[in-house]
Length: 454
Image 1 (cartoon, helix red, strand yellow):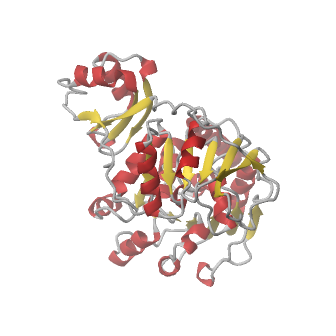
Image 2 (cartoon, rainbow, N blue to C red; image 1 turned 180 degrees about the vertical axis):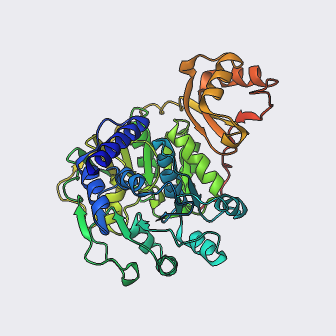
Image 3 (tube, rainbow, N blue to C red; image 1 turned 135 degrees about the vertical axis):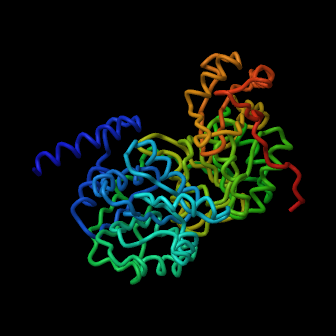
C-alpha cells in the first residue's frame, strides 16, 4: 500500500511540474518536500528566489483530504502581493483543491462570499485573517496545517498580535511550517514550535554570480549619476531601491523628465495601482521600477540583471534581500551602489568592490517594447487566455508575435501588446464582441505624473 501511495505521489508531482513548466526540483525543494511530509514542526531557511513557494506547496497537495469540505491548510503571509503570488502558483499547479486569498485594502464582501464555500487552502495577511476569525467566516476545526511564509518580514512589520491571535484559534494543528529568507529569525512562543527540524540553505544558496559595483556621485543629490548609470545599461530593465516612499515618487518623476520611462512602487499606493504597476513591470511595459524594500522579496516579478541601490538600507539583511532580485537560481547579475563621494559605506559592504566610472553622453534607453492593454472581463466572465489570443489575432488582426504576457484575473485581464501595433488593435476591436459580449478594451490606465516637489 505504501508503495502504491508513493507511486501516486510521484505521478502527482510529475504532473504538477509539467503544469508549471519545471523539469526537476532543486536540492532545497526535494529536502523540504520530504521533511514537510514526515515532520510536524519544520523551519525552512532559504534566500529569496530559490523556490520556497513550490517547496511547501508540493507536500501540501499530498496532505489535503478530498473528503473534508473545510479549510485544511492556512498560509499566513505579510503582504497582499505574496498572497496573490502563492495563489497563482497553486492554480498553475492544477490541483483539485480550491484556494482563496484574503487581504486588507479592499472590500471584504467578495471574500465572505468565497468563504461560504470553503477552500481547502486559505492564504491571507494577518490583519484580514484575524478579522475573518472574529467574524467566524470559516471553521477552524479541520485546519491541520499552518504555514507562516516570510515569517521574519511579518515580525518586522509588527504582526505579532495578529499572528498570535490567529494561532490561538487553531486547536487541531498537526503541522507547523515556518519559512524565512534569513537565518537570524527568532521564533516567538506563540508559534508553539517544539524542536523544529531546520533546513538552512542560506549559506549554500549564496550566488557567486552576483557582481557588486560602486558608483561614486560627485553631487549629494545623486539623480544625475542614477540617470547616467541607467543610460549605460543598454536598455536592460532594473529595480531601483530607495528607503522612503516620497523619494521613490520624486526619483521616478525626475527620471521621466529626463526622458527615461520609469514608475514608482511602494506600500502607500492604492492596491489596484500597485497591482497594475507590477503587471506592467512583469510584462515589459515598464523597464525601470523605483521602489522601497516592498519589492525586495515576496513578489512575482521577473529575474533582474540589474539592481540599483539609490539608497543603502540600514540593515544588511535588507541589502541581501534586494540583491536577491538578481543572480537568482545560478543566473548572473549586478548590484550597483550609488554613493556620494564623501559618504562612507556601511560596515556590511565588503571592502575592495570595484568602482564603476559611468561614461556620460550615452543615448537614452529604448522605450518599452510593450504596452499593457486592459480588458473589462476575466475568469468569472468565462474568458481565458485562449479566448483573448484568438480574439486579438482574428478581430484585432495581430500576429501571434505581437502578443506578450497575458494575465487573466477574476473580473479583468491584462495583455502585453507590442507598442507599434497598439493603435491599430484598438481601432480594429472597437466595435467587436468577444464570446458574444462587448468588453471595454483600452490601454491600461497609468499613475498621474504630477507630484509635489520634495
